[in-house]
Image (cartoon, rainbow, N blue to C red; front, side, top):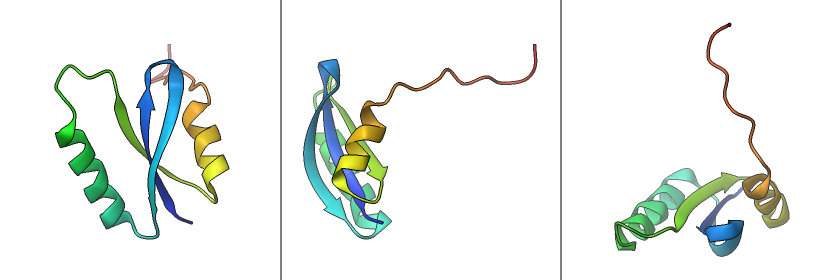
Length: 72
């Protein structure tokens, strides 16, 4: 499964950047993109490991549950 790199704009608008078959080049691309962003930028750079581009986009835009740590 490939690694898809996206730039996420406000309002969860996705901008596809590139896909990679290996983890290391994908991680390097993320580092380069994050360094290029200004410190106060609202953009987020994310990577998603998925079967195809549409699945990666679905996973990136799906609401995430709050993480529960320990029992109450």
